[in-house]
Amino acid sequence: MLFFSTTLYTFARTHGPGWHEELRKELLLGLESKIEAVRTLTSLTLLREEIASAFSAPMRLAAGRSDDAGRFLASKADVWVSCDNDAQADSLALRQLVEAARTTRGIVSAPCLQRGDVEKAPTREAPGLLNIRFHPGPIAVETHEGFALCPVYSTGFGLVAVHREAVEAMRAAHPELDTYDEETGRLIPALFFERLTGEGVLRRWQGEDMAFCARARELLTPMHAVLGVDVVHAGRRLRLEQDAEGFVGMRVFDV
Image 1: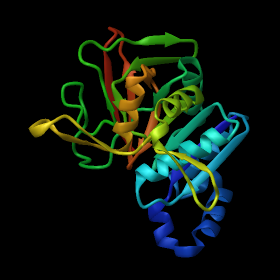
Image 2 (image 1 turned 90 degrees about the horizontal axis):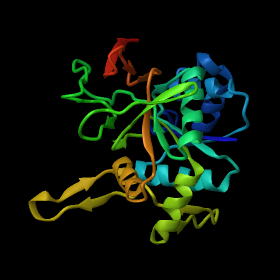
Image 3 (image 1 turned 90 degrees about the vertical axis):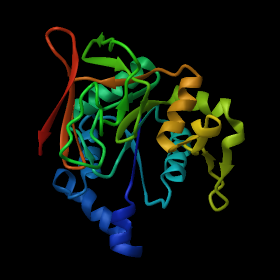
Image 4 (image 1 turned 30 degrees about the vertical axis):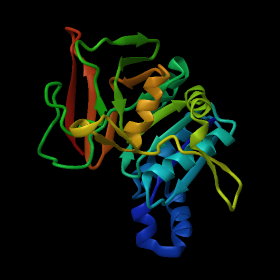
C-alpha cells in the first residue's frame, strides 16, 4: 500500500472555502488536470496498488509535512510518496521511485529543479537550483534490477518516496517532537520542525526538508537519488543520468 500527499496552499487560497469541491473536479480530470500533483497521483494509480492520499493547504510547510508523516504512520502503507503541487512524473518514474524506497528502506528522491532563476541550469560544480545535495567526492552509482541510484547528502521534497521504517525510526528517536491534533487526536510527529545548527557566526537556519534529512543522517538512514527518470517541477524537466564513462550528469529540458 502507498500513501500519497501534496500541499495545495495556492490552490486553496485561490478557491477559498470551496477548494475541496474544486479539487474533486480536478481529481476526476486525472491526467488532464491543471494541477501537476493530481496528474502525478493519477500516474501512481497505474501501479495498481492501493493508495491512501492526503491533500492539505498548510500555511507552514514544516507543519504540513509533519502532519503528512503522522497520517502516513497511521495508515497501513509501507511507502510514502510526497509530491509538491507543481511536480509531475510518469508511472515508470514512480515505479522506480517506490521500488527503490522498498529496496533501500530509506529516502529516495526523484531529482528535480527548484523554483527560481530558470536561466541557470545546474552542474556538479555549481548545482544551483538542483533539489539534492551530493556527498563530497566521486558519485558512486548503485545498480539494482530496474533502477539505478546514487547516494545523496540531502534532498528537498519536490518528489520523494520514504519507507515506513525510516519514519518510524526517526519518530522513535525523537519522542520530544510528538504532538497531537486537539480536534482529531491524531499524532503529529514534528519531524520537519526547523532547527538552528552551529554556534556564533557559523549559526545557520535549517529549513523543514533539510532538518528532516539531518535527523535521517543522524540515524544513518539511507538517502539516494534515482537516476534516469524525468521529473517536471516549476515548469522545467530534469533528468539525472550516468553516461557511458560512468559520470553522473544532469540534463534540463523545456516543457
